[in-house]
Image (tube, rainbow, N blue to C red):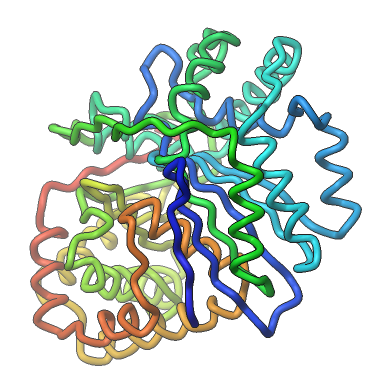
Length: 406
């Protein structure tokens, strides 16, 4: 595959991955601002703005936006993370100019009308209420709060009821003007397209976006808080155990990928095999990783009946301890590398995944790692490499969060 990357005169980065064997195109815009970059009184403003950009522009109404996508069988959506806000659209490849024009319009000239702000405020408050009905979401939210104590990385990207209610139209307009700038933005395109043509289309559609010339000022978290239990009338007890991990570009990331898969990343993992398959104590158990520009996190999660919670938690700790002490076996190493490489290769058949790869890497590191190099990095992980990372991270201070009945 031959990706094309250019930087336009206004500082906007454009990446194109031509795919001759697909009939679709995926276009994504990565805006380099997220919940960690927000002032605390208006926490959740990135997510608020994400919603509002689909409410209309100076040229299109909300109905115009939705109908233009539905008319060709496409889809359009967005999400807010801790370090970026991403908008994406998938359409038949013949409609690529429509997708680019649409995203350029909503990013560049959103209407941000007071009436839309008020109606969408209620939608977001309902979304937060819905999340509060999900105890697994609560457990992971509280885990982040405890792990990154007194730091914006510990905040939920959606904000709180208080901050969402307090955010004004002027707050949102200022945030858009300050952060939606070309030199902190990446447009990624993958599909059956002509690179020269789509780059020209992007240059035209995003020409109104100014450059900023300065980077965001981000500070690292300095402390974690202790364990925490949240009392809730849920039918199950939800447990998260974890600690600090690795940053996005840490050279040990592939070693941690292997450890994570062996620990709880798949059906053959230790957590799944021991706690679900052998003992039947849970339906859901898994491990996961989060990576940011300067730090990361690892965690394991399980949900079980309250009377079994102590047993499940002890088993989770024991399995983590054993992985920290011994690292993956040779068989676990081979399975984990095989899974990571195979899943990565299969994802390359999808235009959305290839678009997300370009946008994610360029927004996080300003470079694209070649596919063969990424595969080779996993392939070079040895048992001793994985054991060293497991010992370093899994033996560090752990936090335990539980949500359920007392």
